[in-house]
Structure formats: C-alpha cells, structure tokens
Length: 335
Image: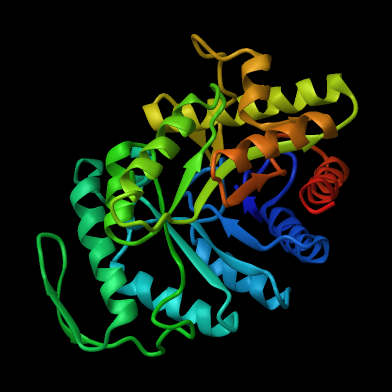
C-alpha cells in the first residue's frame, strides 16, 4: 500500500497561522525522508477548523520543499470554484512540482463555507457534476468550449498545460454508492473516509467498488483516510481517540450549522448526542499500539485498499507525538 500524509490544517487557538504553515512544511520534509509516497492537503474556509483555503497553493509550496514525494489536494471543493481556474491551478502546480501532482475533488458539506463564498449549497450537486466535466476536459484537451447550466465559455486551451500527460491522476472523494458509480464512470480513483463510527460504511462502499468494477474489469485505486496515532501507552491512545472526537465535533457543528465563529475561531464544541465510544473510535482509526495498528493496516490491505491517507496532526497533539507516530507508522508499513 502507498502512504499519503493528509494535512487537515486545524489551528489550535494557542498558536498562530504562520506556525501552522511552518509545521506543514516540516511534516512534509519528514514525510519524504521517512518514505511516504505523497502529501494531500484539505480545503476549508473561514475558521480555524482548517486554515487551508487553497490546497493547491499549499501543495505547490510543499513541492518546493521536497524532491520526490507527490503533492496534491484532498479535496478541491469544486462547487465553490470556477472550474477553468481550478484546471489552470492544477496545470501550474503540476509544472512547478515537476509532475508530482495528484488531485482529489469533493462536493463539500459545510453551509458556512458555501454562504461565505456566495454559492448556494442547494446547487452543489449540479455545480459539482458540471465543473468536474469541465476540469477533466480542459486538463486533457485543447480548444475546449462549454455551454451549461452554471458555466459557459468559448474555446480555450490551458497555458501552461499540465506536465503529466494527458492529466495528473484524478481522485473523487466518495461517501455513497452513487458517488462511487460516478467515479467509476469517469475512470477516476476513489477516496473514502474511515470516520469514527466503525468501518461498516467503508466496507459497504468498497464492496460497491468491487461489484461495479466487475463490468469493466478495471478496479481503481482506493484510498481510505483515517487519523493515526501510535503509542505503547493505552492512556495516550485513548487521549488521541478523544482528540479525534474533538475534531469530529467541530466538523459536525460546521456541517449542521450549529457552530459559532468569532474572529475566525470556532467556539468549543459541546458533547454531541449519541457519540461513539472510545472503543468504537479506536476500531475506525489507526490509533493504538504498534501491534494493534499493524493488524488494522493488514485489515485495510485485505479490503483492497491501495492508499492510506493518514492524519497525524489533529486536535492538541504535540509535535513530538505527531512525528513519533509518523516514524512508527512507516516502520510498520515498510518493515
């Protein structure tokens, strides 16, 4: 399996934005030294849940601080953007990274971000499908024109073209069997989120990938994103599980519109109803002792997962804990 370091971009209230970005660059350099295959950056807006408003900008910066490792987005929230501009940014990032870009697209889920950028979230489905068609076409072909529901433009050709031909690897973040079908119909790779409530949904979607791939005989790459923390200390692992729950509470508030943001800082999230237990969170993540995490990695591999997208920097974990877990993870993945 390939290992991609996922950068969520959460900014704890006790540090400033510049320090967060410096940690990204340091983590990227360490990931390359440890043998990670790639780096993926999130996209979010208007709060310290994540201070990465443009994942391709961060990917390009990471490319300048590394030599080999692949860089990219997870995800570009496509309904929030002009798809031609997105294609231009991808092509430019691909050139500046010497052809090391991977691009993942997603539909987005936070009304707060959509309203802040003046995009009705009710249009996210139609905007996403139309924009995805446009980005794919403009990246691959010259003199593309388009007349559609949300976007129209005369024949255009990207300048520059992407270095990878015909285009960088394209991924789709999928949370339903319909989105799996959409990805497979477009010949895209698929990314899933393990979440914190057990692996049943990821297992269901992987079965759908396998079933729907039989017709074409070609199975895409499949990535699973999950939080990772490795320690011999059970108390430390339980604390990491609670930090995962903390981040999930922030995301849940943004998804449901129950958040409060002041000066870009999210209010401390309350305990939610029906939250999963620590044991359930541990079952969904790569949090645990080396032996426990090694078994989970083997489980993902047996499910046909080809890429693990792993988050080490979440909540209030220290730099020392983050980097120790990165080191231990790669020791388990590549003994």
